Length: 440
Image 1 (cartoon, rainbow, N blue to C red):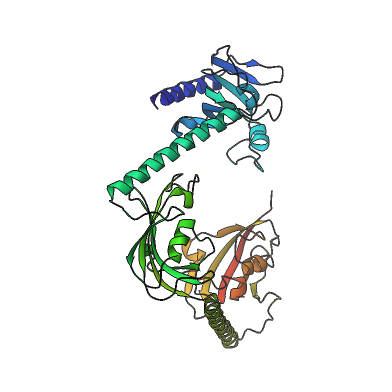
Image 2 (cartoon, rainbow, N blue to C red):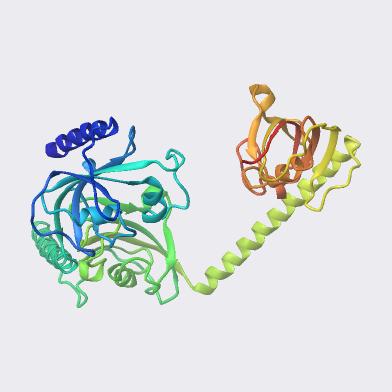
């Protein structure tokens, strides 16, 4: 790692020197600017090879990327040049051990090579990127695949050795089943075994041989329910759960052949891992019973939703009556009450608008106010940065205008609980359109 830091420090000095004009760069026939610090006349990589480099790049005054924190360097497949004079053409000029600097258009790098939809906001159009590269190694695609295959084979050998050591160290004498599963029953259950499509509820702790705990229903405070026979996790778990009865507990030792095999799972489960399950079958029921319960819950939830909707409408109607509000709502349900006509330009979709507002619930509770903060709120109109009721209402206003907005939950926050705004809340806003900026 020290050589990476030294290299990065050296390259930073080089960047600064280059920025000051003492560059000494040459140019290929294709227009690529390059400069070698170390150059060997040895074999060079081809398109499709996997290369490993130390690299960083940036503009004259900013380093945008540095590979020094990547263990063993940055490895990636070397693409064919995207255009004449690009970075990959430069790397194909290098041999192992070479270090060099390349310059290319930032527009070309981000828009063509990186395929970004637009330049990053911190990059000026027409600016130049400088790439500092040290080629550490390269290999063909076939060599890379062979290396990876050998690495996997070694991992499997190590994993099998760890499995055997665990069995010996823990005095496990239970013979594995034909599949390789070791089923160690800790408590007998009662009743039938699960059938395909039954909904089973289990308490489950998942661990690795070294004791690393991957998951546990203890952490979530309730059992996990799933449909048996639907490949919920691993073949070993499915086989083991099928051997339990209600109330039964067991430890399952699941070798990699019936676990995740050569696949890694996230950062916690390496390839060829033996998985340990401590599992309890809490309950089970038929899929029909489960579907019936879910349907009843959905009907109950819908009834609650309908009651909340009706309650919101009743509260809103009462508010309109008590405040003598007779304006008709728009098609969306918005009540727009103009209190002062603006004399400036009308706000149009795409404009950036600045609005002072006070937001209240129907009972008068103030939940937010730009007036209290002493600074108007700005947003781009008509692009969904605010609730639908705001986008619709502010587009009806002129600069300097004021209005009261009564916004049903359907075009406000809906069923969401937004902290100080409960679900199904009709909102009341007093707004003033302070400024309208044309879109650039």
